[in-house]
Amino acid sequence: MRAQDHALIGTAKEIPINSATPVYTFSPIVLPFPDRLKNLEVKVTFPSTGTALPIVIISHGQGQSNHLNSLEGYTPLAEFWAAHGFIVVQPSHLSGKYYSLDAPKGQEYHWQDRSQDIIRVLDSLDAIEAAVPALAGRLDKKQIAIAGHSLGAWTAAIALGAKNISPFDGVVTSLGDSRIKAGVVLTGTGKAGDNLSEMGRRMVPFYGPDYDEMHTPALIVCGDEDVSPHFTPRGADWHADPYFLSPGPKDLLWIKGAKHGLGGVSGWDAKETEDEGPQRLAAVQRLTTAYLRSALYPGDGAWEEAVKALALHAELGSVESKK
Image (cartoon, rainbow, N blue to C red):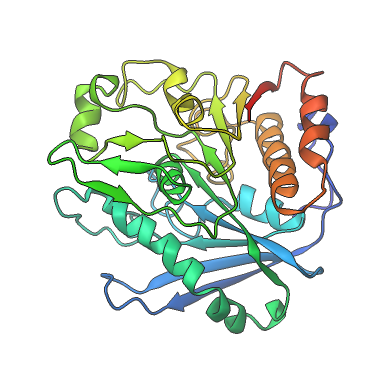
């Protein structure tokens, strides 16, 4: 974390946030995974002080970079969340260029393996704690959230209870996990079928989302300029489908002027970020932190305070909610 806010943070500084703590990063931790093509590597970022710390697992996106689609990405979120009171765990999924592995037909982007990675992390929290001496006795293993961006948003949605119904044979994949108490879905994926472009159907032929049973509370974060013609003929509203198609409680955060990168969540000055901006990124950092604190720290009013502050700054975005 930095000792002060970026000089170009703008009005995002009006979104209240608790005091930051210096952070540590420990990687790689290698978790044995005999049924996987590779063992599972994870990175942990955590505050230098504090106990009973909730856990946030980040599922990275795909993107075009050589390194950010792995545990090396999403530092702008991982460090910020850790500095404000969370233990952040980042697995490297098999879909990233770090491995550059071909995926079997029907398993494009190793999408089911991604979900299994999340379950393996949950099953291995004791091993992760034991691997990092500075973490001993500091995890609250009953307060866990999942976050994901882009392709990782679909991985997060599955962990939160969404199902995939195969367009080929109707096979239902359900890998939700009740140990996860909340989620942050960043630029999620919407309806399939005619809602996908021809290229989109070629890219994700397995994709058949069903959000009816995504009951776990979640914050859905969308950019109001996130238009993805390679994926869908619809506009930015397609990315908000996980909010509208799932049961409450859910919150929908629109980030003003944001495209798929949400200001730069995947990495500092990343070439693939089309909407790089310290103010936009700071708004995402602060608002997601506030949501996670209220979701995982019982009695914390950070989210309510942040939403009230955002209402005074329409240039940053807006929030709607459903119970």
